[in-house]
Figure 1: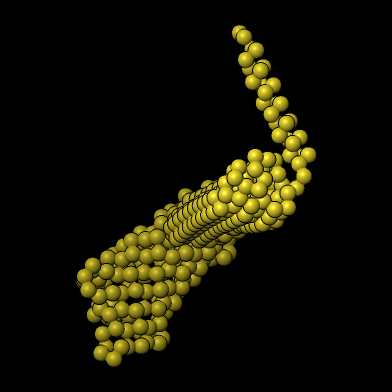
Figure 2 (figure 1 turned 90 degrees about the vertical axis):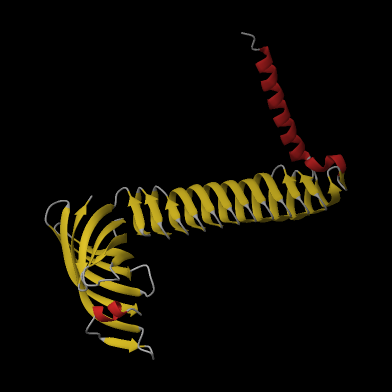
Length: 361
């Protein structure tokens, strides 16, 4: 096997690396850099080896380092480090460490980032300290701050918080807030998602479905004082859990189809007994005109019959809002009640109960 070509390639790589590093170290700072695009600027062909305190380029700026203010109509290309403020109509690219603020219409990219990166589409950094704000996505290996994106945040380890319009993904994180779903391994704080949270360990997930590896999932059958019977899926972590259910009302003839969603908390837990608090909303429908909504606070003592089977039941405090005839007849005694002028709609507060049995897995 002829190893000479590989040896020559390796020697060339080492030589170029040493030459670039040496030239960068020996370069004297240029106070001002003004131009159109490389090499049509005040620093000319020497621009990639110059360090500047002020750069203003109509199209693109190329430099070794920036220590001040950098503005380009399209892009800033900085081979090594940057400090201060970099603003570009399209993108900022910093080869090594970026300190300060970077603002780009499309993308910010750096090796290390310390400060704020704001981009219309994407921020990408290996190590970030501070903030990443993007219209679409933030990417980082490690982050000691927060990420805010219109669509998604993706990081391995983040000590701060992730906020995204659609999804957050991280290995280890403090907290996650997303419009649709969160994915993580270990979460120290809260996971808040409009629909789904996934984690190995998360004590405080807030979502309708929470698939937590060291948490709990259960299928429950419940009935309330209005004979609304539901099959519900409860899922969550050690403390908080979500509720989704569908069912049938055996008291009505028209508004018979039921659906519920909510969240609960295990406020006290022992070997055979625990106390749960739940906040849930329920609707009854015939999929025609009219509406029935009920919001409930439930206090539910639960007793374990077997390792996987549990019975529970307790009082509920309910707020009802309905404009249907059957809805108005469901509750006879209110603590307080308000009726519309024409009598079609009533709102009221009343006390009731819920009881059920659930299989825990």
